[in-house]
Length: 135
Ligand code: HEC
Image 1 (cartoon, rainbow, N blue to C red):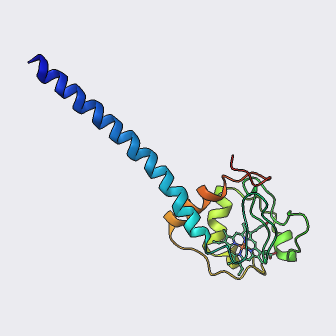
Image 2 (cartoon, protein in one colour):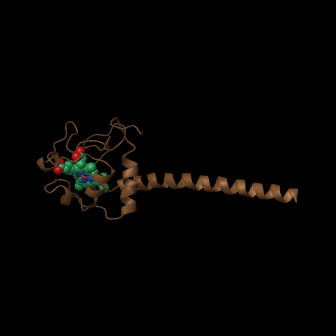
């Protein structure tokens, strides 16, 4: 009886370890899925330490950044005047259909429709502070 209770405790403890490990894995997967989604942006955008403007501006420090505010990047008037501040909500709306949210933008990108992909992409991008280091 006592042995049996001990065995049950071990099983429960293992189950707890398994649940927390798979929880962590789920998080890591979001970020790696986000990094994978970012490949669609990479022809035009860089992010991370040492990122520079390309066809499009760097995406470092995007959370809380005003649209059209990256130093040394030549934006369209439409982007500069959009009045958008980038956060989870504005980003998710924009990336589904950039030209609908900023008519006249020079970002030529059809958009991403899949909500999970967008959520993973945002989780990936918001990690990077203005200096390109992960927060
Ligand atoms: C073909 C090139 C291209 C691709 C691909 C592209 N972008 Fe852009 N992006 C641009 C350009 C160019 C601008 C500047 C728009 C303007 O000034 O009108 C821009 C602007 C932006 C902005 C606004 C930045 C600011 O400072 O206001 C965000 C956010 C953004 N892109 C995110 C993304 C993400 C995320 C992806 C991938 C899912 C992506 N872009 C794919 C070219 C691209």
